Amino acid sequence: MIVLKGVSKSYSSVTAVKNVYLTIPSGCIFGIIGRSGAGKSTLLRMTSLLETPDSGEVYYGDERVDTLRGMALLERRRKMGMIFQNFNLLGSRNAAGNIAYPLEIAGLQRKQIDRRVEELLELVGIGDKGGSRLRELSGGQKQRVAIARALAVNPEVLFCDEATSSLDPQTTRSILALIRELQQTLKITVVLITHQMEVIRQICHEVAVLDEGRIVEEGSVDAIFEAPQAAATREMIRV
Ligand code: ADP
Image (tube, rainbow, N blue to C red; front, top):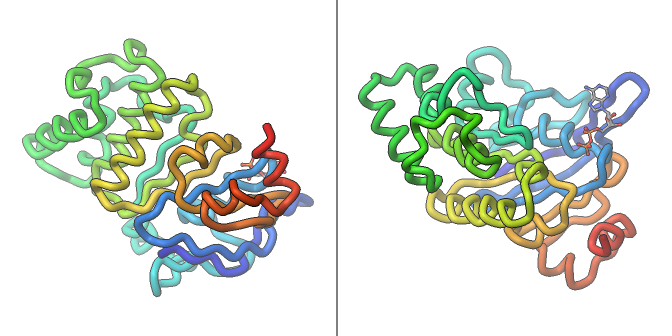
């Protein structure tokens, strides 16, 4: 369980996130939705410990983690995977080389790395693409490589930053189906941010709606689609 207690973050004159309280249960797919500029990326960066809040606290289970520094922070971050809208893959490496990267950093032996990379390529449905250059892969295949890389070190949490925003609707559906399948088989927690209600509807169990840095609505996806309360939620469902 990840718990945010009154976290806030400002950049010069802009308050990006204001006093957010949020509980993200383990083993669920939790979506954070909001318009552009609502504060989603800032909230995700604080939740994934890439950034420290100006005030408030972040807990993973019982452990307070926003105060971690140095090796303790690195170790905690090793238990997380992250995927992005623009994939963030290394252009100089092929698909297998990208997936191998975190395993090399973790200091595994070459044989173990090769075995694990094969396994991961199969897991994300591109078993035959290990030797492909990135430019030979479609957007959906690149995101599969990124997912495999994120899962390489067996993370407990997968953070998804607008992971399907640059993909066409059909590819979006297949990537979302893969994330849901992986979440169920690996029993990980998935935290995603998106501006697309379709993404929430397709795979999330719970959702928080962010507007101008504040959570304006939160609950089960079914309940929120059934009876949206906040104006920001109604607006996003209508689009
Ligand atoms: P979203 O992900 O919902 O689009 P962001 O968290 O990126 O929202 O941004 C929220 C607000 O904080 C915006 O007004 C944005 O301009 C501002 N902001 C975010 N990151 C920075 C930064 N590193 N420096 C300055 N302003 C920022």
